[in-house]
Image (cartoon, rainbow, N blue to C red; front, side):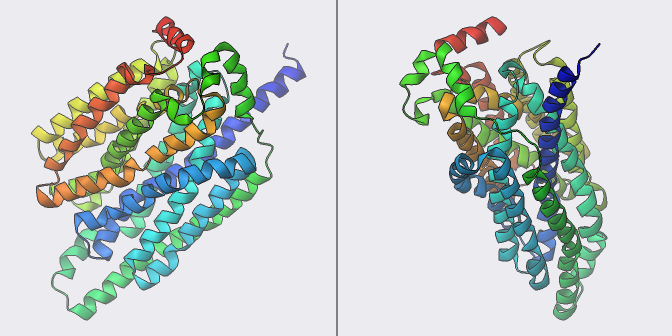
Length: 437
């Protein structure tokens, strides 16, 4: 018979995970709208590839610029209020899309994306270490995988929802624009730009409601400093550290995460444009990002079932790096639908990298956990830089050849899993990893 006390403890454990899962769903939805915004704004604002990928740049560069301020904010507000504040900031960024659409000003769209990224930087800085700390470290990758499913499920839905509105009859419109007069073209493009107004009004309302819900919820505040101070008893060497920069495995983890997010954004945000470049109509190509994210969900499910029962998070990351290299090469040497499919399948290679990097990079940080988390969040700016490199290569060579950038990225991911995450790690934590492996 289950006692009331044990039932209440179980509920207390489930509720935080459920609430954080909602947050992961929300910022997954917001993030993966970019995969539709790129081809949509490319058409509405008449952009080339490099200009179109400024969507990803302005969105993800906010993580680099705002991650450290986010850590300071969280030290003042705590996790719960910080998460609520992040949702409000995202709502402000979404609200900016309304005047941007009315005036068809690309710069205003980009500013709105930067503000959204700022709010997400605060959310990510709070929610990722929160779910990592909320249980034993050896199963952190499993918990983050559950959050990843919430994130990518939203990401799979977002392109379909916004694509149905923003890219409706986009192929026919592209053909008609070529034969229109300048005045007719302006009218049609203004109508196209206005399509995002209603979806973003709905997004703003949902975000404000959720912010209030989180603020007044019973979400427990976790004092990561106290929790990690207990860990320092087992790892006295950490007490000698005076700066987060004295943890090489964290710095390498942040760099690896920088590369990984760039690869993930390329796989998800470029595949629609790439499908169109391969002669596939936008009517069908708009579903490719959803395919990529469904593959990621499948990868997360594998992680939930298998980590740590059948293999470790380190092993999962090694396999992810190898699979990413293979699929990237196949995308380069095949053509048409097969090549596009290889890019979509990268979702499977990407799935378990994020859940593995966080616990590996934050291991043994003690009182530096929040600062270390902000540094990892800064690594998300790889989604700003690397897609721009892809866009420049696409304009200079081809959309297919540009995917060559993925091969060294997945090689670096594999190297971090093999060696990088152990460099500078306290000896007792190294021993624990060797025992698990």
